[in-house]
Image 1: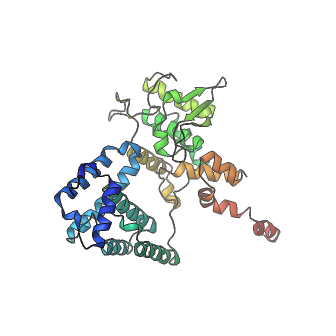
Image 2: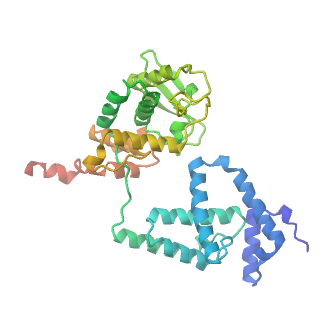
Length: 353
C-alpha cells in the first residue's frame, strides 16, 4: 500500500512512528517522512499569531538551546530519544531553576507534537526524572524569585518627579506605570490597550475595556476603572506628544519615542524590551539599589498593587479579582508576608509583642 504523506496530519504521523518503532522500523529516516515533518513545523510557525509574542519567544529560545546542544553532541533533536531528553534535563538541572526545567520540557514536547513526532516528555521515565529534579531543588530550598514590588509610595515619588518634567519619555512612562498599577495588567496586555478601549466618565475617570488577558479568551472583555489621576497623566502625555486624544481611534494608547525625544510616527504597540527598560529606569531614579532592593521588572506593578491592597485589608478573593488571576495562589505568594500578619497565630500572639 502506497502511503500518501500529503494526507497525513501530525497525530497520524506520530502514531505511525510509534507503530514503526514497535516493529523496529525507524520511518523518520524516510525522506518523505522528513518532508512531512518539515511541512508540519512550518505550518506551526506560520500560525503563531495564535500565541502571545512572549510565548513564541520563549519557545524559540528553549527549543533553540536544546537543538544546539543536540548538534554539539551529535544527537538527533527531533525526534529525540528518551535518553537524550533525560540527559539534557539532568545537565540543565545543575545550574538552572526548576521553572526553567519545566520550560525546557514544555518546549521539547511542543515541537515534537507540532512536527508529528511522538512526544518524549510524556514518557513515564521523563516525568519521573523531572519530578525528582524538581523535588531535589525544593529540598535544597531553591525559591521562586518574586519581582520587587513597585508600591504606591514609589509611584507617588515617580509621579512627583516625572509629571512635572518637560521630557516626553518622563510623561509617557509615569502614565504607563500609573495605568499598569491601577489596572494590574501584564505588560503584554498593557501594550494592547487602544484609545477605543477607553470610555471617559463625567468626573474624568475612565472605564477601561480589556478584550483579552492571559486568563480570559472568551471574547467578553474584562473591565477596570482608571482614576482621574491616571487619566490626567495620560492626557498630559498626549498633549506633550501632540497626539489627538480621541477614544474612537483604533490605535495604541502608548507608542514609541524617537531618539530625539519626539513621538514616533509609527502607531505600533510598544515592545516588551521598552517596558523592561522603563521599569529598570524607575528603579534607578528612585535609587533603590542603595536600599538593597532588587531592580524592578515588568511584573513589579502587579506585585506592588497586590501588596498595597493586602495592606489595606482587602481579602485574597478581592485581590484575585482585581488582578484577574485564575486562583488565589499568586495572591498568596505575592502577599504572604503581609497576610501572615493577619493569620490566627499572629493575632493571638499580638498581645505579647
